[in-house]
Image 1 (tube, rainbow, N blue to C red):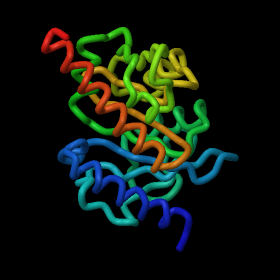
Image 2 (tube, helix red, strand yellow; image 1 turned 120 degrees about the vertical axis):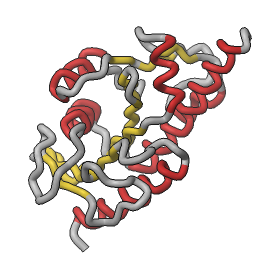
Image 3 (spheres, one colour; image 1 turned 90 degrees about the horizontal axis):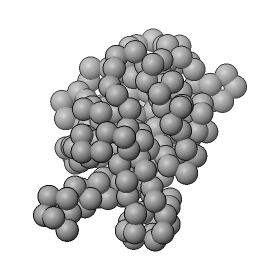
Image 4 (cartoon, rainbow, N blue to C red; image 1 turned 180 degrees about the vertical axis):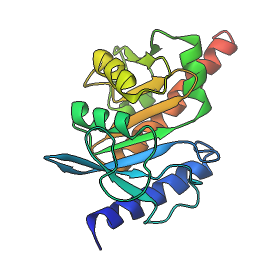
Length: 200
């Protein structure tokens, strides 16, 4: 099996998991894994497909700008995946349209503050006395502009980015770490929103 096909199989399995959670509704969201660093190459889920029904062939190899190297049409957001992987050194990037991050960004457009919660350890941060501010950037269709906004606000200790009125990107050394971070962060954001709503 080729590296691209192997990546495609892993990406399809992860996409099905997220679709089952309701985080990749319709054809929304996209996932990637790094295939090579020099030059940078990523496998990215193909555009316009139901993420709950992907197969190992529904993946496209892209370069550092997000342009297709192999056949197929990558997600329009492949360029941002590539920028995140290049700057952070991540081996995998996941982008989903879970509701909690979008609501949190609406409430805290300058960055979503999180602190003093045990689940922060699953996100790679301390459970206490460690203020985590998840960056928020404005939405747009030009991935170069979004990539520059990401890079300006990038912090090595905060592996996540919320795009306002759109969705969230989380990354890790591999798909498993990225998934665990995303699951923990989504819980943290839902908790934080819930405490605002109930006045806690």
